[in-house]
Structures are given as structure tokens and as C-alpha cells.
Amino acid sequence: MTRDEIAHLDAVVDNLLADIGKAHFVNTQNRVREKISHILTTEKEAMDKAAAPTWLKLVRAIDHFHASSIWSIARGNGEGRSVDLYQVFAEFLREDAKERTTRPTLALRTLLEELLSHEDMRRSQMKQSKSFVLEIIAMIDRQHEAFLEKCGPLGLSSLKHAFQLDTAFWDQCAQLWGQGGGFRAEISKRVEAWFRRHPKITERLDDRLRDLWNEMFVDWLRSYLVDNIDGVARTS
Image (cartoon, rainbow, N blue to C red; front, side, top):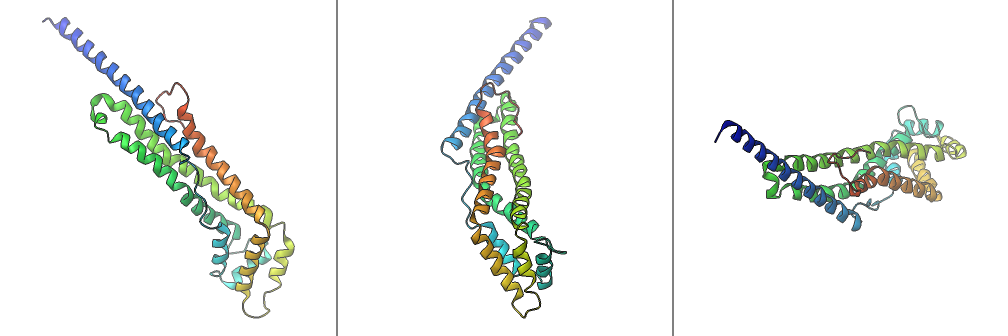
């Protein structure tokens, strides 16, 4: 066999392997679609229900603040010198949002990792397919984190807008300072009562949280179900 014939044969083999890799990649894309479709059709992408309202954590936290910090909070309509009640709420909301959305991300990750563990993925022709699945797995974490980064500001602005309008509430709280013991417990009780009187505020916040989750994560998932997947993991 001549040198030219060997080179031609090598080229034919390379093209054949490339074609096999492309065929496997198309098959991998379809299998990824099936995994994502399963998540969506079984509604496993939905946020979990909150175990308890976030404001309960805020109420309990007040019992651990120094009394002078609480007085400063009352005088500042929720914003104290050392403690910002709205920032504390925002941090709790982010924690709760993470707990409520970890299950959906783990469900998807598990399905994709099962795909990666298949023996076919060990073939050299599966390099593009493997990279594609790994990138989607990485994107799960990035999309989740992007969602969580917006949860805190959403909670802060929502509560601050509603709570700071109630100046009479804060004036009454501030007037309790210096009237004997139990100041901290009384403020905690009044904040709890305020939330119970205004359930629509937290209900609307929960609706906005779900909308944000759908926008940042669920819609991102749905983008993989459109035609002509190009092999590049999508970003929001």
C-alpha cells in the first residue's frame, strides 16, 4: 500500500469516527431532552412549599438582638445602627429559597449524572457528548446561584416598602423603650402580630419568588426542549 493510499485510508477512518461522534452527540442531545422533559412533565421542577413563613425566623431573631439595637431599629423604621431588620429578613429569605429549590436541582443533576455514567460515554467518540452534559450540570449550579442572588434583594425591597409605610407602628414600638423590662419580647410580639395582620404581603412575596424561580431556572430548562439544539449550554 502506497503512502497516498495510507493517508487516504486514515482520512476515511477519521471522517467515519467524526460521523459516529456526531451521531452519538445527536443521540445524547435527545436523551438530555428526555431527562428534562421528564422533570417538567412530572412537575419536579417546582419550588417546594415553605416549611414555615420566613418572617417567623425574623421574629425569633429579634429575641437575640440587644435591646438597644431593637430600640435603634424602632427609631429607624426598621433600619437600626447595628441591625437592619430588612437585611436580616433578606438573608433568611435567601436561606429558605435555597431549601425550597435544592430538591429540583438535585433531581435534574441525578438524571444527567446517570447519563454520564453510561458505559457508552467512555468511548473516545463521546467527547463532545460528555462535555455537553457536563456543561449542563455546571449550568444547574450557576442558574441556581443566579436565582438565589436575586432572592435577598427581592425580599429586602418587598418588606421594606410595606413596613416603612407603617410609621405609626414603629413610633409605638419606640415609645415602649424605658418603660420597664420585656422591651425585646414586646417588640418581637408586635412584629409577629404585624405580619399576621398583613398576610397579603408575604403571599405576594411568595408569588414573586415563584415567578423569579420560573424565570431563572424553569424557563432555562425549557430552552433545551426547542428544536435545533446546537450543543452549547444556554444561559439566562
